[in-house]
Image 1: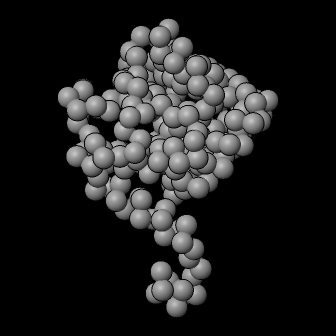
Image 2: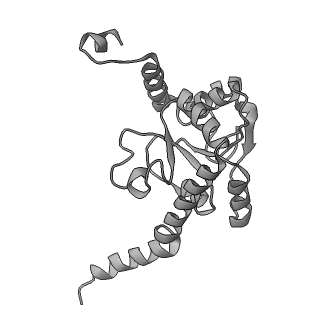
Length: 202
């Protein structure tokens, strides 16, 4: 931090905390994101449930690292995301806000299924989030999905969107319309077939 300031780069303590979380996350995996951001929400008394693969020891998807047993948010683990469409959609629709904290910036099945079900997502920002095939390539940031930069920023935006239901629902509808218009399995299947047939020489 001092070296950056000597070079004329303004670095705040919040910047340092964010960089520290990202560096540690590379070594400890996704659990550190749940811990860092979940703890910030928990301290503010914001209701939180954690769903996902490998959220409990012995579950499919790999065990959580040892430090998870001492995390203040580990008791918020609700279980794995249901596999069935209707049950999974009910889960997506039950919560007012969903968090997407993938460290790569790429959308996955969880995000796309949730958006298709009409869920509102806060997405962890990524330096390359607007690059090809990343979330910002497919969705308009802050209008279809909303990004957050740090634990403090996440708390602020969760509080904001919990108290601004109309705006939250408008963003969720826009994302759902985008997914259903451009990113369904049927559309992907057609694109794959077109790519295959266009490369076949008769």
